Image (tube, rainbow, N blue to C red; front, side, top):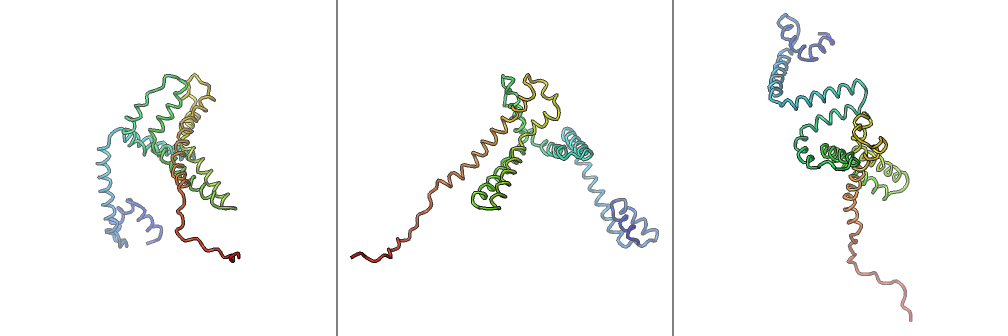
Length: 245
């Protein structure tokens, strides 16, 4: 058997199905029973997948279809952000039903000037993965900053740069509503505020979230600094100076 023929016969179910036929025709295919077992296992997996898909709710299938279409569109447009958003929306579709009931308690404000911050707060509650990623990145940034404070030279500069980069990434995880409004300006047509004021209003919730998280992470460090060091129990060393007559 030629190498290309072997690759074709083992490249997938189409090749596995052809091996028993070739063996019956007298061709040299010694591992056709293995190909037949793989083909049967694939058929069983497809049958089980079909049964499982038939039991899924329609809303879940629609969300998965939107996610796959978004990933394909992002690949065709070479847009990594669109791919990430499509995958994230598909993963978060399961937990939205539980979060929606809690997020619905945030009643809209009476002032139209606070609607942007209210939308950003609801969007953050609807996407808890972003808040968790922000907390993790800020914790890593704090660790890098502590390393920078305890070292000197090039290591300190590198640790400080890593802390700044991690802090920037943590802040960028909370700016997705601002990016969506920037992608489609029609999303802000309801607001009486100019577009520049709306862009600034998107900074309210990320700023509050970052300040609260940094303050929460700074509490253990502050307590560690205020804790007095344990005193030594060794007796004082006698003075080596000669006695004065």
